[in-house]
Length: 578
Image 1 (cartoon, one colour):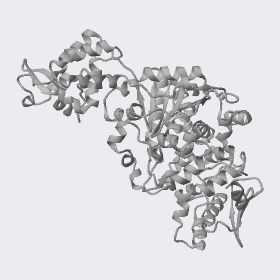
Image 2 (cartoon, helix red, strand yellow; image 1 turned 30 degrees about the vertical axis):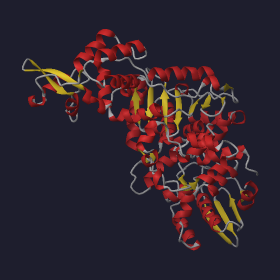
Image 3 (cartoon, rainbow, N blue to C red; image 1 turned 90 degrees about the vertical axis):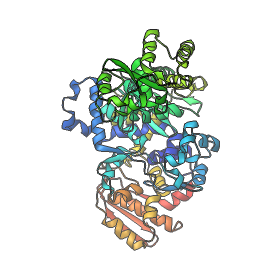
Image 4 (tube, rainbow, N blue to C red; image 1 turned 60 degrees about the horizontal axis):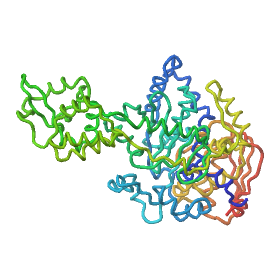
C-alpha cells in the first residue's frame, strides 16, 4: 500500500486539484473523458434548446451550445470552496515527481508571477491569494460536471458553477456530445493561471470560461476579448492535451503525435495573427485606450473638415449601436455635438484617416520589419509616440504563443490510441474505454475521475477522501461527535452522482449538504479520523448499506449505490501508505 506513483496519480484523478493536473498532465484529458462518460451532458441533447441542431453549420451549433452554457453556469473562483492546505505539505507530497524550483516557476500557488504584466497587476491580489499568509494556500480543485451542477445547492448560487479547468473540460465534452465536433479537432490548453480550448474549425475558435471567441472576436478590441487574450499574451502554455496525447512544458516526454502537435501549433499561430487593416487599427485603439490620445479623427462638419480627439469619439461608442471601426462610423460621428470638434488639427496627434489610407495603399505586413519601419517613419512626423504605438499595434496583430518546444521533446506513443467517433453512443464509449484501460493510462484514470467504485480500486478514492478534504473538517469544528453524526445523518439522502457506484468526496457532500449513505459514512470517517488519528476505523459497504466502525462506536447508513460487499480497514491502509 506504499505511496507509489500509480496510487498518487489515481488518487489525484479523484481530487483533480490545480497542482495535481500540472504534475500529472494525463489528468486533464481524463476529466474530459469522465464528463463524456457521464449521462449528464448526453441529457442536454433532449433539451428543446437544441431542437434542429443537427441541421445547423458547425459555428451555429457551437454558438447555440455557448448560449446554453452561459445560461446554466457561472464562473467561480471562490478559493475557499475546497479549503486550505500548506505549501510544505504539497511540496513534500510531490517531491518525488517534480522539483520545488520547477513548481514555483510554473504554479501561481507556489510563487509564479508570470512576466511583466502580472508583476504590474500584483498577481496574488488579482486572484485573491494575498489573503493567505505564509505557508497557507487554497486547494484549487477542478469539478466534474456533477459537482458543477451541484453548486445550485450552495447559498447564493442559482446555477451550476466551476473554475476555468472545469469549464474547459465541460465545453470540450459538450462540443463532442452536443455540437458534434470531432475530438480530433479539440485541444485543451493550460497556462499557469488559466485553461481554455482551441477548436480547429474554420479560422479557429477559443473557449474562454463560459464564452467563445472566433478569430474576428479575438481582434475586435473589446473588453471581453482583452480579458480572453490575457493568458496567451502573458503566460506560457504548460500543457496541451488532445485525443492523441499530451505535451508538457516541463517534461521531456510527449505522448501527443508530433504531426498532430505541429498541426495544432500552426493552426493556433494562424488564429493569433491577422493583417493590419483599417478596421484592425481602430480595434487596436479600442483595446489600447492609453494610446488613443496619440490619434485624432478628421470629419466634415457642414462641409468643412473638423478634428476630434479619438478618445472622445470612442467615448461615444458606449451605449451606441454605431462603431468607429465599421461602416457605421459616419452615423456615430454625425451624432456627436459640433462643439466636440476642433477647427484645426490637434498638435502631436496622428490623423487616423491618413493612417488608414496609408495602411490600405501600402498593404503593411506586421511580420515584415521593413514595413513596420516604413510605417514608423511615415507617422513619426505627426506624433513622437508613433514608434510605441506601432510596436503595440504589431503585438496586437500577431501574438506569438509560448508553446512547449517540440524540438526539445521526445515523442512517444503511450499505449493504445483513444478513438471515438461522433456516431458512438454513450454506452459504446464507456465500453470502449473499459477495453482500453489496460493499455491506456488516460482511459484508466478516467474511471477514477468518474468516481465509480464498482469499476476502480477503492483506496485511491479513500486516500483522497481522508487526506484532501479540509472543508468538512473545518465546518465541523466546534461540534461534538454526536452533533456531527446528527448533522450528517439529517442531510438529504441524495447523491450528486446519481448513478450506481459513483461517489462524492466528503467536501462535496458537506458543501452541497446531501449525500448517499456510503458518502455520509466516508464524510464522517474523514472528520473522526482528523479528531482521533490513532483510533481504529473500518468501513463496510454493500449494495444497500454502509457501516462505519470508529473505536467502540458504530454508525449505519442506508445506501442506493449498489456497491459490492467489501470492508475497508482505513487506518491500516493509511498507515501503510504514509
